[in-house]
Length: 165
Image (cartoon, rainbow, N blue to C red):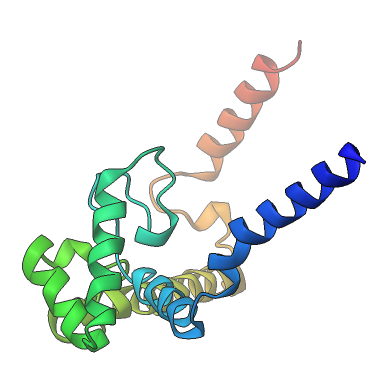
């Protein structure tokens, strides 16, 4: 009989312990998901160079404070733009996980494409030049200015003697 009482007691305690989790409002879970989505656009300012929601430092107080501030701002009904401006005013533009696609930061988005186009053009130009050089007929050795046929024959004979090993 005591085993049955222990099982009933454990069951009642586990239901009581999990009741707050079961009774949590659906909006709170969505708010947390929204905070994670917005938090993915910012960097953790602890110096780890990781996205805010993915900072894996044990006990990182910076990411915890930033996420708490983000959650509180969302709970008060702040928009994503207002939250972004709040973080930019507090930490500067280095808080962005990726640079905004406007103004001077647009150069950071355009330069990889520009480099790719310039590099591809350079490769095509070099290949075109190499192919053109291969199409030219080789000039006969005798017509090379400054080298007579006699000097060419002596040079070849000397090279043949030096490489007879």
